[in-house]
Length: 591
Image 1 (spheres, rainbow, N blue to C red):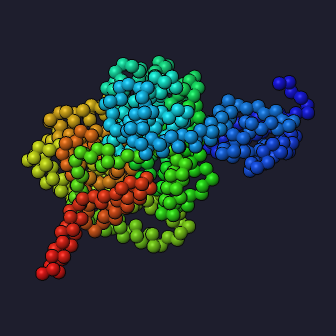
Image 2: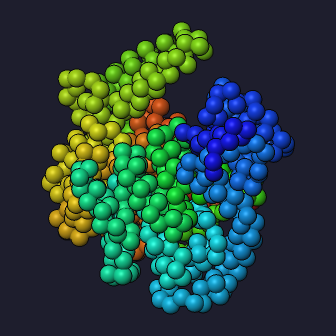
Image 3: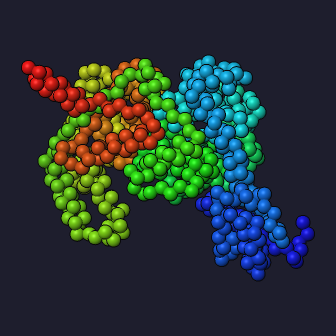
């Protein structure tokens, strides 16, 4: 178009937070003319005048594509046009896709088979996986959230869904973003189920190695959350080559629950260049209901929670978030108890241990200082010093675990190591059971690893960064009969790993992040486990650990209710004793 002196020219660009489009006139004198033209063309849209031009909210930007403001020449940058077209496309198909998804979920395997009658090779899947594949391949869909419980086979589901989409000529490439602990699992699973049908590359290691993996132009590229931040430009360039035929997969998507996190923003920007997006997670809302917002937004560009104000209070937010995902969200959720009814039972045991004498003194002194300072601090000062107070609370929990991590010169054997001595001598030494010992604190974990070398202990924590080394640690624990103990940090090893050679897991200490704890529970309780599993929670008597454990259990129940799960209280010694005592009282009353 030839520039005309009577036509205002404005550049259209997106925002860093992907929350609006910004229209900026090339001639500053046209700012007010731009505002008038946009308001005339979009009278019902809440546009906002800014110092540079006009701002249009993301949920209304699609209207600008069809508007023809008089006397205005809009110059779209590619990112802004893609931004608006994505939101227009989702709105056009959302209702139809939701209706088809509900039909598939109601009809189960029978309806799923009808949807997939043009596809061969799905007989290896369970009934719920047929449903998932059908849901993920609804014609015209833009993606969904796959929230099946851990161990129900989400990875396998996507692999077959990808194969269906490729066979139907609807997709060419998949970018999978996963935690480091799961990077090695994806290529193995593709090989297992698809053989050599697809080229699969892992973008890991040094920057040069990652670039080489991208240059291979594989059918499936697997990388971690850190790489999607550090190499966002390279990944975006790769995706743009495929147009709408690229698929984005975010595995363990609770890592992308916070919009303030760089990885979440990078993933949201990469999503703009993919025709479909799937988020996979068994524990999508580990801490609060609003953990779900960004995960749904990765799939549907913010449509599910559009116009919804979510309170900060967790209890107040739960019904609002729950209603939004039921009314608008595209998600599938299967519980293991339903889809894998033959999976063995889980039992929990809380083992209360008294602090050792020096350990007790250190804990009492630290608690006294901590509580005294809290009492002396007003609300405003507390907010400023919140990080410091959280660190001191964490130090109290670490003293319960092993004071050597925070107190120089501590030489006493702490209470939990003494308890572990007896437990491991019985389980490993006498009963020849493999055991996973979880600990959140680095010093505690390394002490455990060192102390129990006689059991062939291996260590899996954040210090093990090499993908091949991580895979070898898991292989040894699963296959080597001389490797009887795995000492692991749930933040590093809690997601995705299969450790079902063990049926015992001991929690020496727990992360205050519910996601880490909940994910770690299912490392030994998953497909292939043939025996009942036992969880032993070591808790120091009369300490903050008891409350911490209750808070984690409450978060688990809240997350399950949010997704509509049927909840059975965990079987514990305390619950069974209470049941037995109630039965005795009933019997005595009848005498």
